[in-house]
Length: 315
Image (cartoon, rainbow, N blue to C red):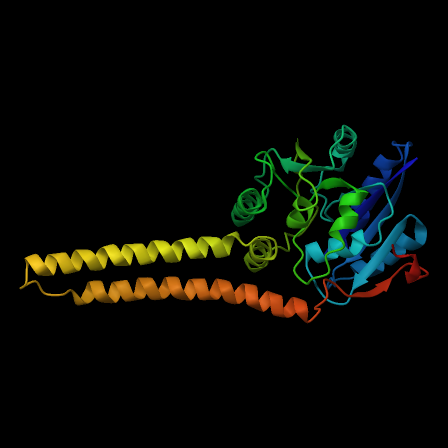
């Protein structure tokens, strides 16, 4: 009998996580061919979700709870949960009720066709805020251009992966996890299926614009050197434009000795070149800073408490 492992990061979901878990268990009871476990990760939520998780774990031995020492973010919380998984297939989903759990059999069927990862994308993504939809588009384009994802690659937080993919992903021990990058450096045998997007049970997304930008930076700087190559190209391009402009000025001065040199154009050129230089230095600084933090062994996550009797049971 194959085993399914579900990992659900929990943040501000005191009133929703039990509903999500109950629905999930109801569907699993109809899938008698599979055993299961559910790993709930409290990402230092400010509400009482950890109390709810402990209660759920007390009533169902197939539910495990992990509480992180501080808020590390969704990707780090998933990495913490992955370390506790023992199933043949690992499924990630959200705690807000928007994930259409009834699509689970479809994901398993596609995985058993031979794929290593089966993701989902929303046919109609109108329930997300505009900047969230834009953020999703940026993440998908970045995965294609920077990480070499397949052209039809689309992603959401609801996906299933074989255990060997997850085992390879949790080998990453640095402080800037980016799951798409970790997944794509393990396998390209990925497909995606469309699913319906539900309404949230309550509240609003915890992903702010600041968190989305931080996530993009993880993808840009942790798993690709293409931004540095782009920076080099921009530098060469600007130098070439500067050379052509300088040559044109010299030629015009030779043919028109009385021509006055433009103060405004000089200032504009200085601002343009200076801005490009500062942007490139900032990009290099971002890489160097992340390298510095990583070599100081900043953790991906820190586990404060679990519902397991013995932490030695962690895989």
